[in-house]
Amino acid sequence: MERDPNIRPAGEEAEKVQPHHQRRLRKIVAPDDPRVARLAHMADDEIIVRRLVDADIDAMVRNDLRAFGVASRPAGIDRRVRDHLELDRFVVAEHRGRIVGNAGAYSFELTLPGGATVPVCGVTWVAVAPTHRRRGVMRSLLAAVHLDAAARGEVASILWASEGAIYQNVGYGPLHTQPVVSLERDAVRWRSDVPSGGSVHFAEPGEARDLLPQIWERVRRLRAGGLRRSDHWWGNNLSRVENEVEGEPTRSTLIHIDEDDRPDGYAVFTSDGKWDDDLIGNVVTVELFAAETNVARADLWRVLTSLDLMRRIETDLIAPDDPLRWWLVDGRAIATTAQMEGVWLRVLDVGGLFGARTYVADDTIVVDAGELERWSIGSGGCRPSDAPADIELSPAMLGAVSLGGTSAAMLARAGRIRELTAGAARRLDSMLVVDPLPFFDTFF
Ligand SMILES: CC(C)(COP(=O)(O)OP(=O)(O)OC[C@H]1O[C@@H](n2cnc3c(N)ncnc32)[C@H](O)[C@@H]1OP(=O)(O)O)[C@@H](O)C(=O)NCCC(=O)NCCS
Image 1 (cartoon, helix red, strand yellow):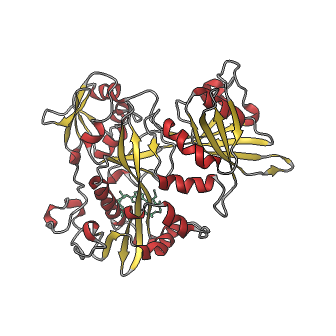
Image 2 (tube, helix red, strand yellow; image 1 turned 30 degrees about the vertical axis):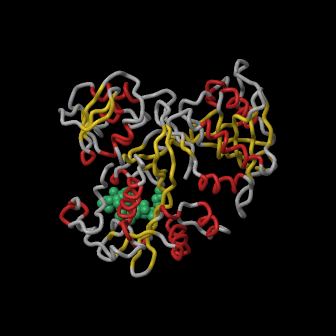
């Protein structure tokens, strides 16, 4: 298991901390206090990072909402925090008795290229008070979350970033691209040869709660990036899907049933119900989508693109290699309005992550990943190596290429990784890049 270089367990000497962090992680506070126990360390001279306790919840929620600029406190948020977050995975930063930072995690299982699944940590709720920014508080909170994740046997940490610059210097690399798309209903025309079969209906109250988790449990294994969604995650999201959360827009759920009467796909969407100057202006946003087969995928999109009184559909759930564009007479009906990086990954255990995925080409590359050390990676397995490296790259860039959704050759051209053997980046790509491409559609 990798040791996180940012963390100094209780009792260890300051000199062993990486030089970059020495100014911030000076001493351990109350190492035998059960509340702070293993995770306690200093973000700077006076800021303690420790596990969250129940009495912190109100202050943590206030800190988080303030940091994200949320105007009003959502109704029932304290109860949802208690019911749906894995609070034993949360840490807070405390300064003079006040909460000034928080971070937490979900326990996920990630599908890798080839279909194996590994435990990963899904970082969430990262916020530092504007009054305490850029003093290493987030770095220390994440170090505590990573240490806890490694102790749980999780091989990587993943997250959605609010801004593209934040996480690169704490070891995270972007795994895939995530187009945000918009479909004008009147521009959508379906080709006549697109598959179809079974039926689609609107879910009755309670039906989504029963069906969505079981459909997803099969779908998440079909593509790298699929996550096993914990009961906490489903609890949080199904209360929205079932329209039980006050102040949220109403959601509709479509279910696809195959020809053998088996549910095999769903789409959850909101509709803003607007009219522009008495003309139809309704915008539909697809928030959750899963299909086990191309028939289910096509049938669900057929219904979504033909909803009455709707002008436009918006979503970020269509992977760059999704067949939808090719099912339309004119693929330009799907306009990409923004392009994000999708999920970011930080490797915690190189052998655990790269040893569990499969490789497309029969080859081996030696990578030197800085503090994550030198590894021989490929079809023959993944193990520590002292052979001369073919590629030198940062831990963040090792994370970026790990699932095959970010090209090593492209990163070499951009100067973000260094080839020490000519052509090594292209060889690495031919080992790592898979079909279908990795894609994440679980938001957390
Ligand atoms: C993003 C946020 C958590 C950073 O907290 P912080 O305590 O100021 O971060 P740190 O001081 O530990 O920064 C660690 C490193 O992260 C990077 N970083 C942090 N904030 C950054 C920013 N806004 N832009 C670019 N890089 C940033 C830097 O590399 C920094 O190292 P450096 O200070 O040596 O340059 C905080 O600004 C915040 O709460 N923002 C609003 C909520 C939010 O966006 N949360 C993230 C959700 S995904």
